Length: 140
Image (cartoon, rainbow, N blue to C red; front, side, top):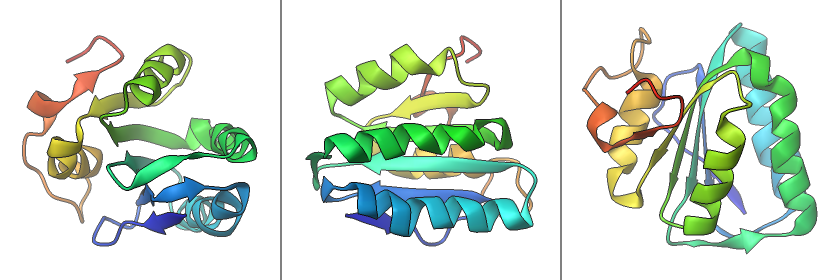
């Protein structure tokens, strides 16, 4: 299942993977949330949490996750929060090809990830979240 993360600025889409994530979860929750944000904002940001309650993706869900990339030119920042090493490796492998600033955060730094992805937005918090992040673009 995918749950939306509440309390983020309007131009930030927050999704948390819980249990086994299916293709329908992307089609019914994640994609509409991204499309709603893009209807109101030219550029958006994304935080994707794969925490302790995450149990995995179906194969079709992985494909739908990749298809979120169709909106990549409109996404400025992506924060991925996870301790799953295979997910971290996958994100590190793909990040170089993405136009967005992508950072990895451990589960314990979820609040820092939310702050970083919201940083500089009028309706978002401004604390320094860079310390907990692993920048994947070599800029900090």
